Image (tube, rainbow, N blue to C red; front, side):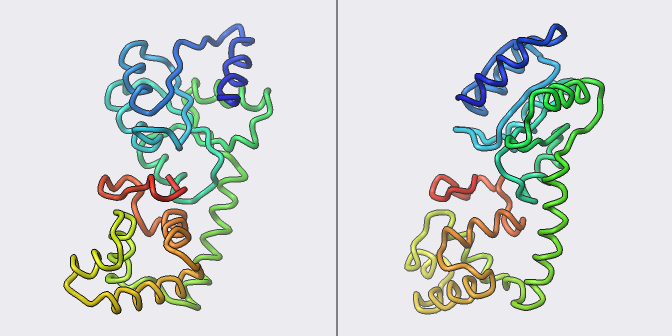
Length: 216
C-alpha cells in the first residue's frame, strides 16, 4: 500500500500523466482495464485472487493496446521470463525505482519500448551459469521426483502422494531425500521455492496451491 501511494503521488506530479484507476488484486485490475482502457498498467506479481503473471494475459486479451509494466521485489529468472512470455512490456525491481528513472521508464513504455531492469537481467545470466554448474554436480530432478514435488505443492501429504502414485510412503520419503539433495535444500518449502526460481515448475499451473508457499 505504501509503495502504491508513493507511485500514485509521483505520477500525479507529472503534467503528461494521470492515474485513472487503482486495483487491490489481479482480478480487479483486469476489470478496471475493461472499464477505463488505460495506456499503461503498473502491476505487482504477488497479488490476491489472480497473480500478476496470470493477469498480464487477461489484460492483453481485453485490451491489446494497453501496455503492462511489472513492478516486483523479485529478480527470479522464471518470474521475468514468464512475464515477458505473457506479454509484459517491462519489468522493474522495486528497489531500483528512483523517481526520475521510474518516470522515464513509463514514458519509454508509452513510446512502445520494452523496459527490463538491468540488475534483474544481469542476475538472470549469473543464475543460469550457477544453475548449470549445480546441475552438473548434482544432476537434474528425475521425472518421478518432479511429479512428487508437484503433488506436494498441490497440498498432498506423503501418504496421499503414495496413494496417488501407487507406491509406498517410504519410497515417497526417499524421493524427497533425493530432491532435497539434488536441489541443495532442506524442506518442501525450500524445494518449491527453488523450483519456481529455476523454472522447473510452471507458476501458472492452476492445480498448484501456491498459497501454501511464499513463492507466488
